[in-house]
Length: 94
Image 1 (spheres, one colour):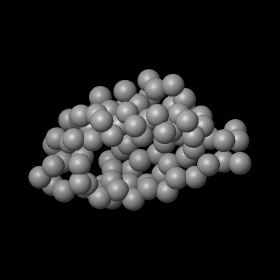
Image 2 (cartoon, rainbow, N blue to C red):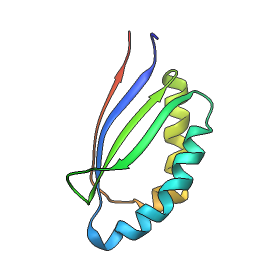
Image 3 (spheres, rainbow, N blue to C red):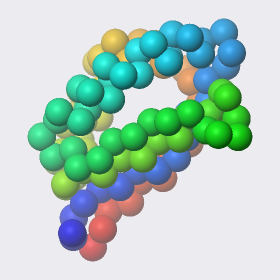
């Protein structure tokens, strides 16, 4: 579908923050999946690295993606994951 925004990548979580991130993750996933325009949202532990979480997102369009980013930046998730290294690739289907 043209115009969809796709994000793929990972987040690095040090051992001392792993429990807090893992505990907060289900609520973050549920809130994001409930957002208007969220077509898919997955954050799963890497099978190869216990401190890495693989992230995959699909939003219906740029507006939905932007709304997600705005909500997430002011959420409890943002506080819990502040300063963690993230490596994401974002692209828009044409």
